[in-house]
Image (tube, rainbow, N blue to C red; front, side, top):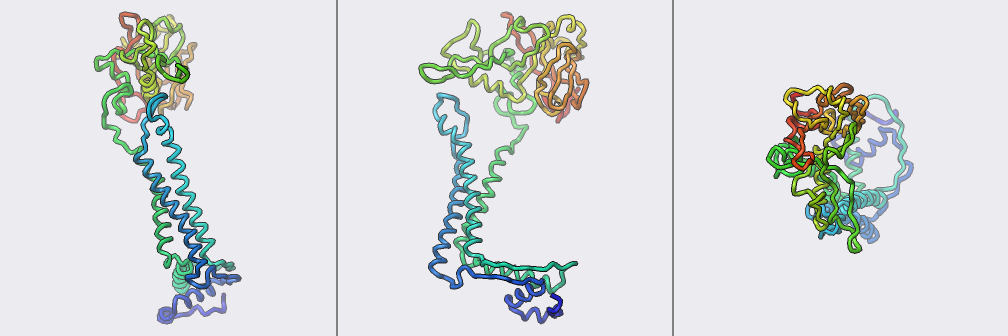
Length: 401
Ligand code: FES
């Protein structure tokens, strides 16, 4: 490396051809090309054309799969279908098709790049000794020449079909990664029609219906699933949620309940084996802010409960209902310990006092669990007396507690 002339003027460098600069670059870098063999020494050779078609096929397949992915993402019927409903089979294929087309677009792109390198880039073994310190002007100029040389030896410049297909495949593969993110971009303040999961905004739940004049029952989850009818499974006559009477819960017990409106009832003396309310029940269970813990305090403990201002009449006798969604970061606060009357969130061990309107007494949660006002109707079923008076869940927005 040291016996190579490094003192070229800008004018001398300007006069050199790209090949001369590239050769000088390898010499200056102390690179010795130990072995080099062109894959197709004669341009336009029929074998080269065949190889080109083979490589182009992989990029074309990648493009095709990328287009198929976008088509599936945009046009395939994706809305949920339950058993027996028409279109269940096509709906079931939605996610696998996205995976297969997106995956194959990337796989074919990878195979295309690997086979292009193996087919057209010259076989070469070069050995370089490293130098210390920053590069000088000669090195920088020669590096550019070497990159130019790499572009020329790659022969991509004279293969517009492969270059175009590889470019399009890369763009589509990129889109197939970015496009699904579009599905999670939404406006959290835009209300939809009010339903059993609220209106889509963060401060409504299925219980909000109670403040709009509907009777909303505290529904017990029976965990019932589809049953066999006439040789096939159907949810007809299956009641996932059933109404609860106060006496259905023992003293010191806790149960998770979900909102049920009158048109969702299919139990007790109004049970109809031909009704199918299952889907609506599942919507209620899947409502992200719907789950409520109904706690029946032991009577002696209930006498010690400290009511919170504005919530004095939210409980019904010994029955207290608190949102199950932890005010820390939204886990289900699933554990109720009847000896201490504490509600524990297993995620980060926040504890809330059931005797003090769900006030946090330990752990990272800083807000009380919102309390649902409850009572019983004239038949003795537990119902919501109104909506929560504060937003449910993590304290990401203004709360009064
Ligand atoms: S989510 Fe409940 S303690 Fe963190």
